[in-house]
Length: 199
Image (cartoon, rainbow, N blue to C red; front, side, top):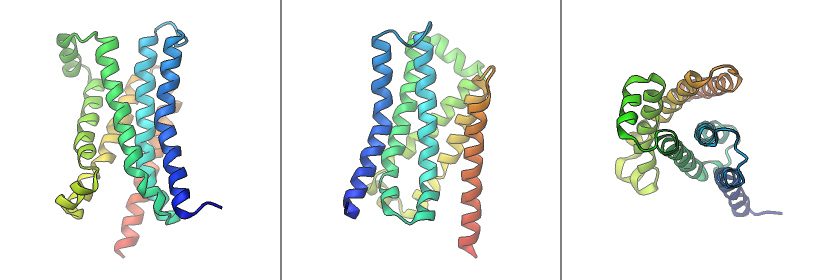
């Protein structure tokens, strides 16, 4: 029988696996040439989808904690949030390097002229201060209230990410629709929970 500390350690290891194993699989597929006709596009899309999944999971950890009261969920929340940020940074770098070939003229052109690129860049930029202030010392320095308000930007970043995903989709809208529904459900839970808490 695992102790409470042991259960938290197992959960943290599961979060580590969720963040790292898909990257190893992607590297393995790239090495063996199993990423399809346009492997560069596959990498860009895979990193973006994984980043969005982990970002939604980060948001879902708060309702999960409210429903279960298990502290291990909140202990691992920062870990999975940083994994989401890492995957989305990888998504941006893959797009700039594998699709744009580090041609800064075209990168700037697409950022200005293509709405879905602007939404994606805006989402990532909103996550930068959240990643930089995700540590306990930052929370203590800012004060919990200011830190808490800042980290509500994760909902805005996730919404921009869902819009980015939706605008990139050409035929099968099941995944972006699912992502939008999950985000809407998480936001609704947060609003209802806040209203109940105030009362």
